[in-house]
Image 1 (cartoon, rainbow, N blue to C red):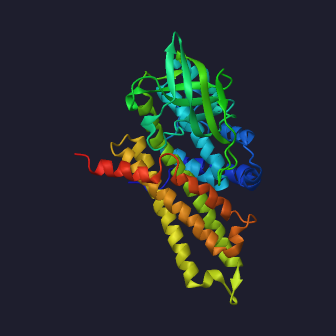
Image 2 (image 1 turned 120 degrees about the vertical axis):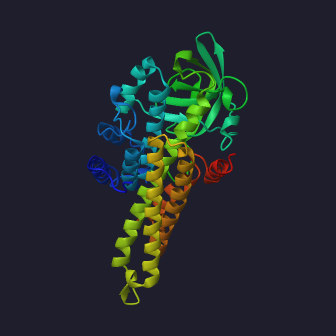
Image 3 (image 1 turned 135 degrees about the vertical axis):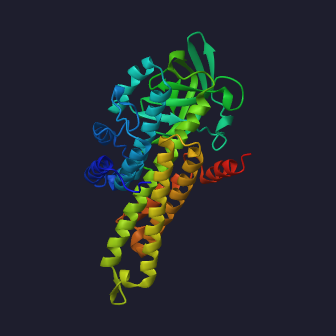
Length: 379
């Protein structure tokens, strides 16, 4: 049982860390403040292979593992969490096309997805179907060699900017077996977008509704067979939970490192505040929780790579644990800064805002407990 990265993985880690420190971290505060979606910078990341980390190399993917992806997303998120998180969404959507698409679909879309010439979003959630994803109402009715789609998706990252929308849409009966996966291309008649949501965090990526009104999409854009969409979605979310957990590690690590620097520089009562045992104990707990979270993420990623039958449960455990503890670590780092932590002059308030949504998306942490409990009580 290996608890260290291979030489190749350390090289990948360093590449991602260097990119984040040079291209993400210096701009993250400005992107947040001005709500800038840094597509050109993400295309630079794609030049390093980060747009298709676990997409096969036939059409330009990197062909790496889920564990490699977790290492990369931690490093990117330490520079800018919402940018790293969007790259992870693009990766998930691209992987769905690679894993379940036919050869024509893969040839058509993947080469440009791998460079991020095409940007992809993932559309599952609806206004009335969040945690209960199988109850989604957006419907596609077959009309010859097209589907006519009506309905809408909510909280879609990249909405209005992305070029491809990998959508879970009802083509049949109620429940999970009636859901199919359909790619809708930007510019399709009947496709429109709501206003950009005013969010607490993740301000550097647009989030909006995606609306379908008699939207005609070729049947050739369906990924997999009719009725396979929910299975595709759930398999995608196993990896998505690892990715968002890894992004949480990066933000928490950045917050901890900022706190470590601050407690040396800040003096009260004639001493560095890092000399007080209360401060030392808090830092010790933060570092311990970060290390435990990383081990859980890596373990779940490795389970997904080897197709362990417990992988879905382990991904849920890791996502719940890592996102909860990362959020607490960032909050503790802010507390150690006192009033200064509340100011935008320091990055802590941004880390706290960005991390909060990680406990909600890719399945709420309450739903993670449902998944875990279901596995534990399965007869």
